[in-house]
Length: 498
Image (cartoon, rainbow, N blue to C red; front, top):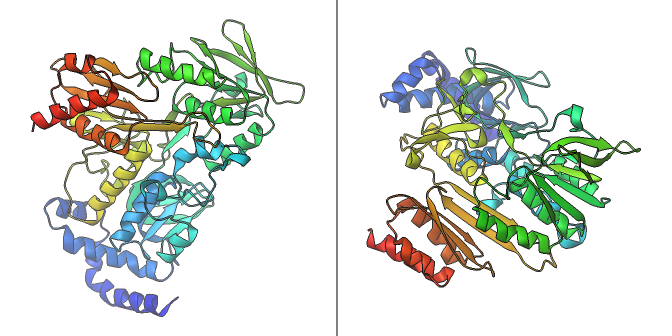
């Protein structure tokens, strides 16, 4: 133990008796005081009581702050703790992964590029490089005094005793707990071939490594699902010059966001890159060849699609176990929280994909499975925990994708969407390369906007439009001769509404 830590431990030990009667910060009394504005003294006292053991090198069970989960949100939460000077000797992250938090979107984008096309690899995309921040490697966590338990997920939770148990049998007592367990991939049942060798799901680096290994020897690739995962993986497979087919039950790709007209443009681009589509189809089973690996997919109509590598991208579900007792939202799944990411249990918070939170601007409870929300919810939650912040989380839904960005690609694709895709739509542009779609509700307010291949200035306009929801002249948008003209019309509507 360093001399600084020894001094700190001595100071904390000397004051421990004076503050002992206050208990931990997540006790009912502490919560009540916090609500009445009396949190400052109590929080300071309870931090000290936990910091005694933390400064001594975590030689017992007590941890002042514990984050369960090692994904994007955990990395950004850790950064916020450091920014407030509250990480060193106080924070513990419990992760099922063998590496520190990283920017997960890379796994279906740059990570899947062929070896000769500069694929992304760790440590290159540890958080928080995705938002322009510092790369938080294992050394960063050590330097900032953050304890990280790798490959040791939480398997049991007791809210009454504020205790966690990990898979290795380690027992942790927490003062404040942040649940950041994310989502897990929805899998095909084992009885229909969902676990055959050569069948892949992507949620972590190990999954991506396994898929890269398969792509290196694949001849025919089948992607099941026409959403984010399916479209990004299929684009990456094109970089390997592989025979690629996408199958999905809907009428067009990205049905939760794209209009039929918009989807058609992207489908044609994929087809130009050799991708085949089978729409309106369902998988009956996956079959194995003589070597035991997947060899084909049998569809519900009896037709057969040959494939030696299958990627399943049919959605994800929030990982709420073992925290069900904290409160699960029955409609959207996930741990239910308020606008400050507090659960129904004092001292317990939830962030990122697993959090069911109030979407203030649209007045509904939702979950958002996206890196932007993971980053922002983590920051907002920790600010709430460490300061007197009471400002409600006011999130603007944002989605994006970047594909065909490998070396030698004839065209790179990068689109962004902000807002809500409700109401009538106006599409402007010919997709060469730009195209924009505007969603306008019954009272002529702009609710959402989508843009492909915009400039940085054009992309920066989108959140302003979606947040302000200006009244726009739909007829003017419809008569716009270019994407640039349409955005200028929308921008002028924004200015006139100020």
